[in-house]
Length: 417
Ligand code: AMP
Ligand code: GLY
Figure 1 (cartoon, protein in one colour):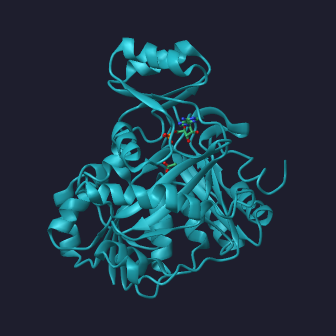
Figure 2 (cartoon, protein in one colour):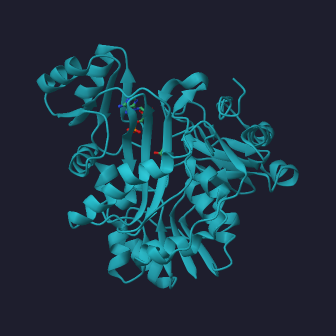
């Protein structure tokens, strides 16, 4: 099978790594990719947002499967363009990707499907904003309606800050604050059949102790030793299957990866958000634990034959990933800094720990930072404590001027306080 992956972050590196280890994959391409993905896939330049360009590339490569990684191409209709030239694609249509592209649309689908989520108002005027902030009280949760790479959400006790963020957006969703630990649960679906993956937890705030601004995600781990063993079944029944059924009923079936971001509150599990693609950095830890070869699962979803997919097989191992971000992330990340220590990790820590590249590019013989999140250092171990130790050992070998990372990823879950 020839597979083309669209994107160039750590999620795509994790996808490409898994696909490269799958014996069914005879050729693997990534467009545009990054410096690390080049080690496991052949890179092709492409404008990932240009559906015609992606479809042309897939045709040229005689791809049997195209996997669209990030949300922006999905919302822009890249999966539709590839499907239109008759090539199976893993990723939803532009219409179905509105589940991520518009928070208001997601709320509407959840209301119709009876999916538990935070109560909310969609506001377009200052009067509506004030009424909604007043109705819910602090802490205030204010979300830009459109795509914002995880950075359009402000959660604050400060009414003035909440109001300022709301007024800076054209259309905002203001909602009830959900108190409780967060879980990311992904499901692969062909629009009918839904196959859940293993839950993971993401660390969204920039700084240790969940302080600082929201980011795209600073680290993740899986499994969740503290979670109710029935969580996956419960979310399947209350959230994932009803959502997939509702989108099919509307004539816009969702095929691809349905990401449920959940809060486990005292009053039950609630959806915080949906995404229409694999999460980053959760994918790094979820795929590290998946034993079933990936390509066949994704192809079954793309072809509408997921009912024929044998049950997924998981490793007993735990996995932890720690994101190394550039100086000044998430505000105005500095790029172009030289990254050192990659070969030391390869020599000393692989295969238990390895470096997945997010924003990197090659400059002659060196690899330099090219984005806010630069690397996602991933490790597996017999339990979370061991996986975390291996991940941080590898992180310590990496040198990137001005870089930052959290030191508390998976610490609490590993019983370390
Ligand atoms: P989102 O982009 O919707 O995932 O929001 C980013 C982050 O903001 C989430 O991971 C939560 O940590 C926080 N957040 C979003 N909505 C809520 C909510 N209703 N209550 C509490 N925290 C929230
Ligand atoms: N880790 C959060 C996201 O992928 O949106």
